[in-house]
Amino acid sequence: MKHILKYVTILTCFFFYSPITMAQDISDFKWKNRVLLLVDTELNSENIKQQIKVFEGLHDAFQERDIIYFIITSKGSYDSDKQLLNLKGLETYYHKDFSGLILLGKDGGIKLKTPFIVTAKTIISLIDSMPMRQSEMNSPRSIKLQ
Image (cartoon, rainbow, N blue to C red):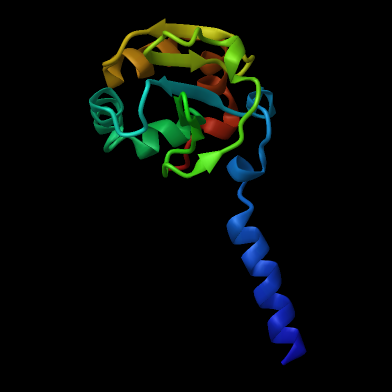
């Protein structure tokens, strides 16, 4: 019984402490992910809803490009499941009156900063044109076995 409790505790820790929930600062994603910041006044604003709708069906494309997104409002930062985070360092990327999408490259730099709504094609095309992404596409680890 003690062993079962021990394993359940360990599995619970892994389940609740994903890399996103463990991250405390936006810079924790540098060199690991391309980050989309969806910035608006409210978590469930029409702009946020429409932008997230654009992302539907893009799970594989986002995963292949190491894309994650966060929702940023005046009340806080949220992950893609709309769970409240305490993500620091976001204030360097936008002013409080900005509403729109910000794309951060793996180097942490702003690659796109534009009002809502941004098409999936715009995001994917921009990322695929970046030198780091070109290198990723040409690396042996990205070649899929047939």
